[in-house]
Length: 449
Image (cartoon, one colour):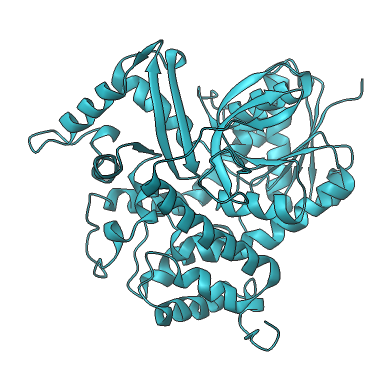
């Protein structure tokens, strides 16, 4: 049997890549695998390769690790390809927050929806489609796993325009389930949770401990945590999540800083310089801190790669652990029930658009990745998610075609953008801030549309 080949495109991911290398080195299935790390930054690729070799050696794994700058050199014969790219890097993400802010629009994350999510997709989608087409040509049997945000738009673009064997993974629902288990005081492995929706706005449909429905207990805990005299500590006390559960009847994941951006009423109209309402300011502060800390993480990784600093202990429940478990199931044929994957809908949620990418449970094994049908969502939730899916579809079509008209429409449809005039200004300023990455959207396409 030939060696299993794993390719990671965007290996400069400072959190995910070390975790993936550690988990692969701990897997018997991948003991003799070859891992190929691709990044356009040669120092990033080489540093991660050195780190991977050190991890493999210290943990007694036969894993081999190689660095590449050109992905086409790495892809032939791959069984699994993962993408964690960030076109524009940390500076691009910062601009996705700052450009809308200059026009009075505040976001808490700016990487999924909101005008920042649209600008990010316009940069990410063309590159991910190109990667997907290379995979289809050079490793047609490989599964492509996308982690890059905006996850929904990216997976939709790859599946629709490049490579059908693709799915997306995000840690949001995994962390939400772990938090709920802790709040309920039950072991995580004994808690059954069913989530469905779109990435970063996924609704908890069912919550059971064994045979017992513990959703009523969750409602009581949320009410207690958000009562006027409560201490307001812990995720159950997040006011946006509690408000959405009161309005729509179901608990949304993965927390206030993400779900708030899908609705106009939590963030719209915040004066520049004012603290965000709904206790959302810490979420924005955490996003900006995470962006700013990336350079410090590289200092640490360089020291670990060189041997000057001890390796980290791999944390339990890290995101890469899921990918390795899923890859083991795909390669061995042993069935695995996965909490949530992002795949084309195709009837899994019948009252959402068929072409939309949805986040649903899945069975993974010899048959591949099989998303499970969860039935219709409540009408109000379906209406909310359909509107967001339609906006993301426009965004994908704009990114693939380079159409300024569609890009403008996608921005104007966002609930955080109050007018077409502001949408046009954000698009123009975004083109300048992200130059030359968005140059295709500078010229009008009215003559060809």
